Every structure is written in structure tokens, then in C-alpha cells.
Length: 380
Image (cartoon, rainbow, N blue to C red):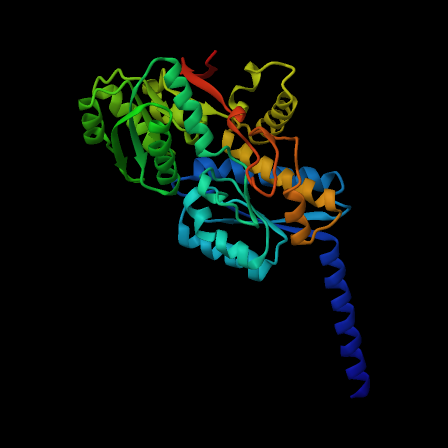
């Protein structure tokens, strides 16, 4: 009996040593992406990118000599499933940092969990509300809607447009954009003549566009992510509306052009430089980063990169940089060092975080682009 007790005690100690040793050799990172559901065109390239980076980093010796174990959950573009995924990562998997979620609404639903758990979250969603006011443990990589709106309105003013109509989706991303549009249109000396809203699952926006047409605007701004904006583009052509149409940065992928077809011609929007990497100057510090990511992604997955996969690329690399800066995988150290990162050249722009800014990008992260012959072209 005594021998058995000694045996079990020895076995327990050995198992504990093995588990602890394994834990010390692995850095657990979490991720929540909408790899399926309505936002899968955003989340799938994010998931692909994160898996690609895990493979690349581990093949190069990992981070601080430790392998990265990436635990990914698909929230299926469902807010409740996103909440459950966050709980698993925080309570069961005990990750040191999390990338994602994909959408603004899902991100906003879980930010308080990360604040309470004191685990850094680097979101791949765009809404300004994610980081404003600043949440201590929450960061994001996409350019903010405020900067996108500013870019659009400056372009509109340069064209002499004065009367602006907006049509926005009634989800987290659309509501955040609508709030900024309603603030900045008058603040920048323009007149808001129409304010229409559509649902995320709506398949026809004819009635909203007819109302907008009746107000005779100089330009229309649509704020949403696919498929809604593509429906707006097609309905506009079907109604014979010639008014210039701007989109948000939420459609900056080839998927929008595929969905809208010929109705996408002439549409303008602010976008990160990833989709126009071959058009930017060779001395732009982003160019080598963009070219390398495009080469890596397209050779591995045999499909074009998208802006949204780039958001995951930025989030992953920012977390890696924060770990390396502090030579630590403690969540508090990762958070503290994320806040100190400046001059980081990513796919979305050059990031300059601070205690007052957990996005680190400004209006200069965007190019105004126009769809011409089914391709993105920088507006000169």
C-alpha cells in the first residue's frame, strides 16, 4: 500500500512537471473570427491569415523561443456565440491575449469581459466605439470610422458637393458610422438632406433610395458591410440614380465588386493601401510589408488578399511585438507594451499607440479609391 502511494505521488509530480513544462514552452493566443455566417467574407481571410502566421512564426523558432498555440473559435457572425467563445478563451483556455472578433457588434458585446479579466484584446473590427473612450485592455487594428468619414467628406467638398444623403445598416458597424456621419456632415459645412437605414438581412433598398432621390442630394454615402452595400449599388443603378455614391471602408474587398457587378463602377471609398499596393510609390514604408503579405497569402491560399485579413495580420504581429518588447508573456506586460508601440508598419497603416489612443492610426492610413473596370484605382 505504501509502495502504491509513493508510486502515485511520484506519477502525480511527474505529470505536473510535464504539464508545467509544456505550458512554459507554449504561448497560448486566442482568436475569435466570423469564419462562417454573413460576415464570413471578412472572417475567413482573418482566420487564414492567423493560421498562416502561427505556422510561419513557429517554423522560425516561435516567440522568445516558445511555440505559439493559437486557439480559434468561429462565432458564425452570431453575437451570442461570440460571447460564449470569449468565455471559453478566458476561463477554459486561459490565453494571454486575443485577436478579434471580426465585427463591431460582436466586439462591443465582449469588451467588458476582457476589461474584467485583464486580458488584452486586439479587435479586427472598425467601430470607433471599440476604443473610444479608451478601454484599458482593448485595442483595434482597422482604421476608425471617424477617419473614413473625414476622408470621404473632404473628397466630397473638393468636388463641390454640398448636400449629402446617408444610408446605413442597423448593426454595430452601421450605427457607429451613422453617428459619426451625423456629427461630421454639418461640422464640416455640409448639409445632411436624407438619413435612411436598412437591416442587415434586407435584400432590397429601393424604398430608401427613392426617398433619397427625392431630396436631390449631391452625393450619397452608404455605410455597411456586404451584402447590403452591394444591394444598394445595384438598386441605385436599377432606379437610374446618377448621384455619386461613396461606400465605407467596410467593403474594401473584391467580394464587394463580385456582388455588385457592373453596378460597382464609379463607386468611391476610403481604403487601406493593401488593395492598391501596386499603385503606391516604392518609397512608401508600407509597400514591402504589403507585397510580402500578398505573396505569402496568395501563394498559400490561392485567393486574393483582402483588407480584412490584413487586420488580423496587424493584430497578430502587434501582439508578437509587445511580447518581444517586454520579454514577457504576462497579459499585463503585453498590454503595457502594446500601448508603447510606435512606428509599427502594418497592412492598415503605421501604428502609433499611446495611453490615449488604442487604434494608433489616423486619416493618412487611407487612400481614396474608385472602382474602374472592376478594379480598385487610387483617386489622384
